[in-house]
Every structure is written in structure tokens, then in C-alpha cells.
Image 1 (cartoon, protein in one colour):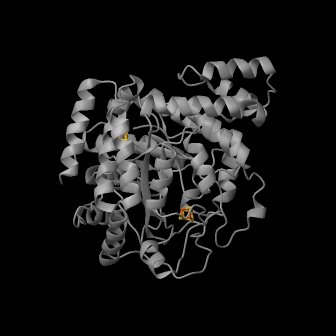
Image 2 (cartoon, rainbow, N blue to C red):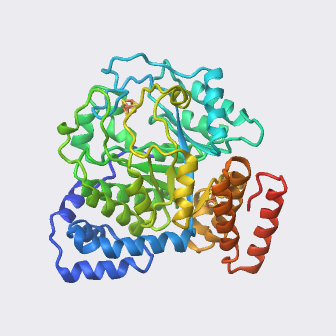
Image 3 (cartoon, rainbow, N blue to C red):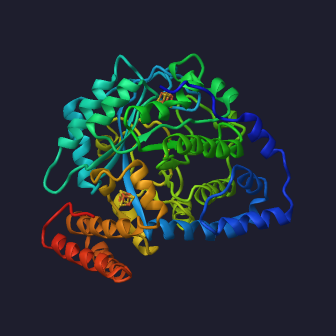
Length: 461
Ligand code: SF4
Ligand code: SF4
């Protein structure tokens, strides 16, 4: 059993960030970023401390190329599903903080099925399950029951094939239960890697134990979960510190378990009930945010980068070209939010900016030349952890991601597309399938696409 400790080297981060890089140093690191081999903490520090206008043009191009080289021309889609807003914590940035007075709720089985059916009718196949921390009102068994209900809710061609789970830091025993029920990625954001800030924004609460929270992925790994997704809430502290914190966390996991983060999320603080954005002095500008996303892509080439609907349509469209590989679509961030949005009422955890429907998001992706993907293949083929990483690092994952993206997109078009998307989407699919340079993979994909057109579902490689 791992002895829990603070492996974020504060002294080293502060030292790295204290240096002002020369133009030569900046150009040298930019050149190295093109090799797609990742960057050291010190090299990332050079780019973090470089002026945005000096690095963004090159980083943008390199980040886009790296993502295409590893994963191909596809963007994975998912939706969050909030099942309980009961919370014993008092995070200063969150609408669900216990000091906020509003009527709390958790979904019962019937309400959950209703939400899942709405999501399935929108075409979703993968969800991120969101639950506030409350051992009494939303214990682990409630989460496990909910996961089983979601997997068992299938109507017509609608089914959720993979549930990523975002629950509070917990014990090995609880993680074992999550592993056994068959989750996709276990998601947990450190929020901030800067301990004094962490302590300040999590006052008097279960979540306030920095070291316990920081070591959650270790406990999850030891309980059998080898697929984890990290994140920092940008705006709590200096974004440069958070980027280096994320990289250090990833490296510690890689060194210990041979596999680091599968994904990284990059939420920025948004207005929420009971908080004032003016109280947060480290809010991140759009240019700084661009730099964060691009830097994470070049520093950790194999990690999926997730952008949520917190960001605007314009910025999401732009950053898909610069390394983002997963986006949420049509999101509601309240408990029972999908039903409520049909009825035009809401109780959200925070405000969202991109409020397009999944159909509109898909049209936007196709117009940009990206293949929308609802792929969940790796989790269902046991390609997680180091098996996944070795495929990604050998450059073979693209031969899997692209066919699966094309197949799941064909399914979407047949089951949920309108006339406009069907026409443009099929054109894109047949164009992209002919770009696959491996003949065996190409033929196999064409065969499966035709079978999907003829009514088969859930084909993947
Ligand atoms: Fe609770 Fe999570 Fe909100 Fe904190 S961020 S108050 S733990 S729901
Ligand atoms: Fe993700 Fe694997 Fe599907 Fe690629 S093939 S999109 S890595 S699940």
C-alpha cells in the first residue's frame, strides 16, 4: 500500500517559474516541441514564462499536428449527467457548496432512467457521471446502483456504452466497487495543486485534505482502476503553477504504474451561485487559456484533452484545431437538468457558454472537417492502462480511433441525423475512409460501415 505523501515539488515549481527565458531558449524549446516526444518540466517552464504572442502561433500548429498524428482527425463527444447535488463540502467556487441554500435533490431510479433516455435520444453513448460528496445522501452504493441502471437503460438503438465517473476522493474499497461495476475513466480534479490555495478554497470540509485528494489516483490504481482523468480548475491560482502541477502528477503515476492520465480537463472558473468572480484574482485570459491547452498537448502528447461547454462555441472550435480531443455537447449541469431543459427550468452547478444541441455541435465539427466520434471501443476491449498507452506510443492507436469514429458517426447519422447532416456526414465518412493508408484496415472499415448502413449496430475494432 502506498504511503500517502505530497509529491508536488513546490520548491522546484517556484524555481522553474522564477526564470525569465531568453529568445534563444524559447525558440529551442519550440523546435523540440515539434518532435512529439513531450517536454520536461523545465522546458514547459520556458514556454509558460514566454509572452503568449511569441509562442501561440507555433504551439497552435504543433499541437494540432500532434493530436492528428496520434489520434487522427476525430473528436470524441460525451455528456455530463448530474445525479445528486447533495454535498457536505463548501468549495468557494461551486454552486453546490453546502452554504448555498437551495432545494437539494438526487435522482431516483425512475428519474434517472428518464434522464438517460433523453441523452440516448440525443445520440449520446458515453457519459460523465457527476455526484456531489455526501456519504449519507449519496453513498457509494447509490452511485453503483445508478451506474447499473444507466447501463441497463436501453431503448431502440439507444444505449450508454461507457460511463466515466467523477466522484469525490474515496477509499480503495470504494474504488474497487467502481472498478467491478465497469466504469470507463475515473475522473477527479485536483482543482489546485498549490496547497495553501487548496486549503483556503476548501474550508472545513472532507475535501479539504490535500494529500488524501492528491493520492486518490494511487488508491484507484491499487484498486484496479488503471484509467484516470485529471484536471485543474483554472483561476484558483497561477495557471503556470497548475500546469506544472498537472505534469508532475502525471509523471509520478507514469513512473509508479507505467501509465499516467488518460485525459486532462481544463475547466476555467465560471460564475456560480453564492460566489463572486471578482473574488478570484487569478482568472485566466483567453490567450493564457489557449497557451495552457496547447502546452498540455505538446508536453503530454498521448493524453486526451477535454474541453467542456464552459467555453464558448468560438473558442471550442478554435482549440479543436490545437490539440483538444474530447468535448461535451448539449450539456446540462444540474441534477435532472435534461428533463428540466425540456421544461425550461434549471438549477446548474455553474454557467455554460456553448449551449448548442449535440446535432448543432456535430454539424459544426463536420463543417470544420472533423469526424465526430462516439467511440467507446477501448474500454470494452480491455485496451486500458498500459495496453492503451503502448498502442498510443507506437502510433497504432490512430488505426483504431479513426475506423471507430467513422463507424459510430455512421450509427449517429442513421439513428439521429437530420437530412443536412446525413448528406454532409456521409460525404465526410466515405472521403475519410479512403484516406486510411493501411489496406486491411480500410477494407475492414468499409465492410463494417456498410453493415451499419444495413442496420447492424455496435461494431468496433
Ligand atoms: Fe461539492 Fe464538488 Fe461542489 Fe465542492 S466542487 S461543493 S465537492 S459538488
Ligand atoms: Fe478512445 Fe480507444 Fe475509441 Fe480511440 S479507439 S476513441 S482511444 S476508445
